[in-house]
Image (cartoon, rainbow, N blue to C red; front, top):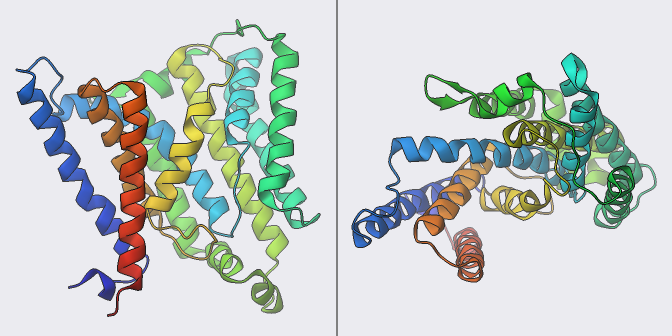
Length: 317
């Protein structure tokens, strides 16, 4: 069956999944070329990378929830940072709930600004991002935070069950929850309808403002959860801990076939996009590629995937 005959939501999943074996073969070839000095991308090595994939996957999940109704959540990195700092500062059994509360406060605030004030999400997000960044610097005085993660945070982030990172089970739980929400509930259908045409959705009786606020709340909660796990992995809070996750999270969502203007997307595609990006980063590390070359190759692969998506979507059936 030709790619053009597949549904717009299925096509990107197959394309992204098709790149995964190619990346693995490249990693094996690099290992052979270096006479075994580079780590071989075998199950044990890939399980280690699954932990990093879990953090990115949770962030990408929240980002997809915002992109589906046609918006974007740029303050994600500093929501993650704020969650880590609050969770480690509170400590004890209330650490994780306190960290998640940060996301549940920041997310709906962004959603209200976008849906009620009708400010474009990218513009409003820049203002919120600046406020959060300033608050974090004011709190720490520009110095590295000294608060430590709790044992529970470290267990969830760095622990293992049957050799599998515990963080991957958290990601799996988030994945199942979001998949059920999008495919089995009225709210999931309303998100897609709002992203397709917000005005038409409103005329059809959908409370689009509530949908947008809910989507941003989900994004904030996912960002805070990822931040809490990152604090557990590093054993303490760090300023800017979420900064490296914004570009790959957006890339994973778009590579997975979620339409950037909203209305179309499946979580299976986002999952495939996360796996592809994590494997690509792993292979580039195996190749000991300098940072400049790594960025060029990383961006080139993403552009190639997006071009393939576009061509396959435009080709006649």
